[in-house]
Image (tube, rainbow, N blue to C red; front, side, top):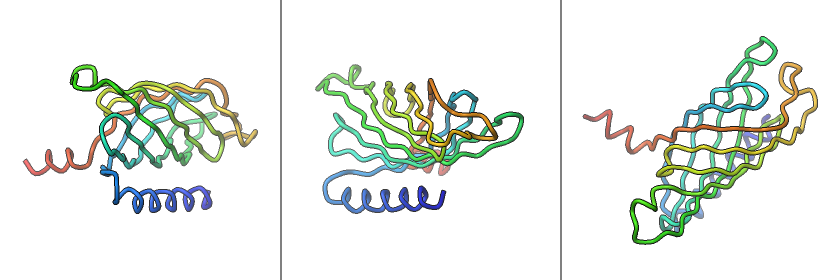
Length: 163
């Protein structure tokens, strides 16, 4: 657990340092729903890096909160995504991005693909490969993985709170 959190912090710091030279960085808070043999609520933060709006990179960390076998469980998660849209000079078509990424917890690793609308609403799916056979509260997490996420830029939240 400490190794994953340390690795995530190191990754975010390194990404932040390299991003200052060539990329614009935005901070996001995200909330969502994750289905992974159980239903989980997801709450976390992400950093979004972009040089232009054709290819966007995101890294983040979150907590999955839910009930497994009748007991409350919290599962830390790290994730990375690439958002791609190569339509140029057409605003309506540029509102959606194709998304490819991966997420990892202490219990599983899951590659995923999906789509996002303006980088704010994500719908992704993938397949989970378990790391820990004991799972969470005795329930193994494997198979189909579905995520629905709402990404809220901190700049937008700050502007809303000032009014």
